[in-house]
Length: 129
Picture: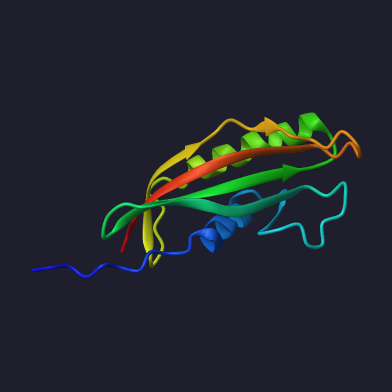
């Protein structure tokens, strides 16, 4: 019996919802529309990934953390990493997260306007339901 290839899920809304629930001190969005300095802000953008089997794949996201001071933003970025690591075994109607790997946050603040920004990547390995 040949199993049909399943449509793989868009995990972007899942990650945004997870952050909104579990990182309430920050505004969470897919972009910076409406952002005003010095708001605490986290953006999530999909950057690719792999579809490796009929039911498994990995989705990669770019996570940007903004705020008022570098120490505050670095702390927020580490909180975001911790929050994402807790997605392990999280289940939605479409998928179960089976592994989470984050890079360490990097300071890519804009030296011209002094707006602190830290960025990291997260890869969520999943199995479709």
